[in-house]
Length: 234
Image (cartoon, rainbow, N blue to C red; front, side, top):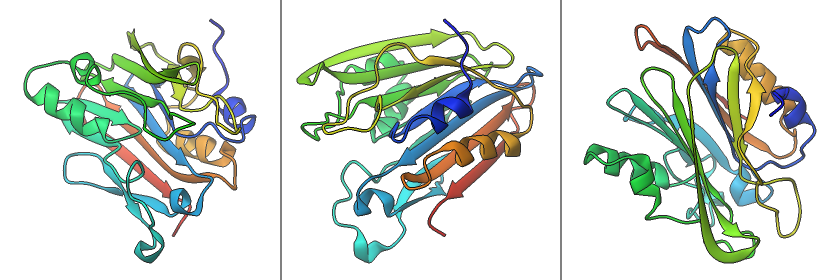
């Protein structure tokens, strides 16, 4: 597969929905994580990321008085357990965390879940786990061509310097919104600097629809972390 330019992919897609990027810096010293959320409705846009007490982040209403339905939009996108970092677009983060805590793997957890119950979109559940050595896995649970039958796909990657993989919930904007298709997209990780990496993603997300962005670089030798959170709502 051709390695794509992440900035160009984001700039050319009005509504990829929620997205995960996992990879490794060009100098091979850091594992790379990015997770972003977008929204079309006032309820979806009324959110921020903030740090939680389990090594990750949670979503939170920016204005509590405007929150109409917390289901599907309030969750822990990122959690850490035993040196592994879990990142997903929904409450399956906790499902994976709980199963891994009991000695099971992420696949075991996701066999108990399916796409979101938001007919007719049936928004896919996308998930990733980064291992302490930088290798990573990605998964998508999606409807069967718009029908309420769950298809489950799992992808496992050895970390390679300067390379990442990008998966997102929606192929593009629409009504109903078409689900992501195919394998996670290989993308170039072009910088060893987290601020430059963060800026490139945030600046290329659609200005009207972007809501929040989380990025993290994990030093593979020491486990030391650098984290950035960008919220449109300030």
